[in-house]
Amino acid sequence: MSTDSHSANVHSRKELSRQGLARYSPAVAVTLGTNITRLRERAGLSRREINKRLGRFEGSTYAADLENNRYKSIRLDKALALAVALGVSLEELVRGIHGKYDDLMRQTLTAYDAVAAGVLSPKAV
Image (cartoon, rainbow, N blue to C red; front, side, top):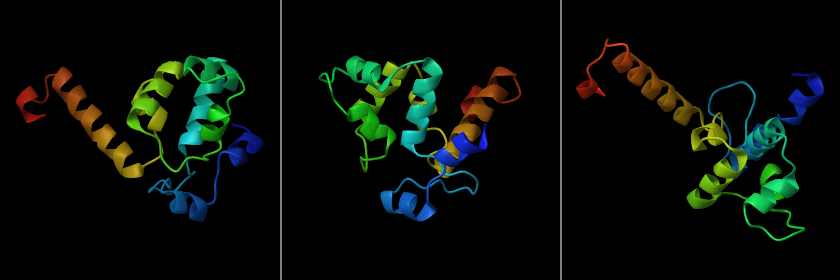
């Protein structure tokens, strides 16, 4: 990642905390907006295409507003629709935003991997 794109994804911890979006672990602060931008660009989609996939009217700034963290929160149904529009899982959409959630997901996936490998009983999960 280039220095310019890296610095574009770093936000003031004070601002993120105020918005309730600060990541608990140190490192780069990630927001829903930075994830949306990264995932949209990876998929080769424009903001206009995301708005269209979400059923927004022509000229809507909804995708841009989400990417710029202009919403304090997003409803679950809207987050699910956004994940579908981006072609990703809900987990991928929110990855990195909340350190404790990320830790829980890692623990859960580790437990499922252990079950799949026959190291842990499914009853233990």
